[in-house]
Image (tube, rainbow, N blue to C red; front, side, top):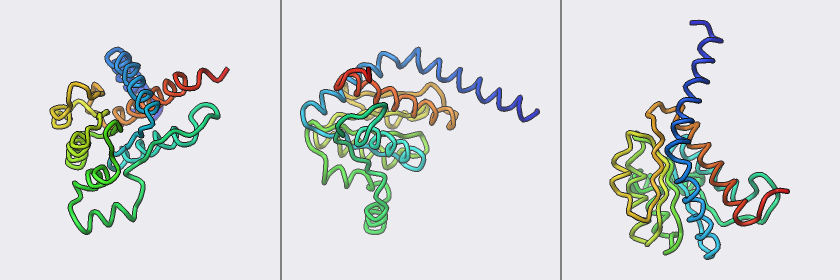
Length: 197
């Protein structure tokens, strides 16, 4: 297969999964944004976590809230639990890798906060413990995962939000996780600050 043809195939695959995600998740994205806005209006914060590339997505989300997304506005309280290398390595060396997020949630999480977990089926251990710690602190959990992440879905409570990207093709899942994050940020900005115009 020629390179250009392969690139076209990758674009088509992205379009297909994105269209399915839009059909299945657009209403949930809208409802979730309202939940996040209520958390922020209640002077609570959003904690975010994820391993590897998912950790990078958690950092993108928090940077959009803390700094700006599409236009200048005041910063919003969000914290990535995946970005402090010193804390993460200390938690790993003194305990278990699966506790890298849950221990931070136990120290920082409060009732009314929201935990955003970005995960896939290969990184469930730390995500599972993070969700359990968040529930122990009466936090609502928002999960963005793939279609093979049943372990995470089984922990979700009725008030939680479970985004399941309709695929297990990792690159396509990551692309759609980023799209959902960007949609949430755009909706939060719109609901709190109006449009850029």
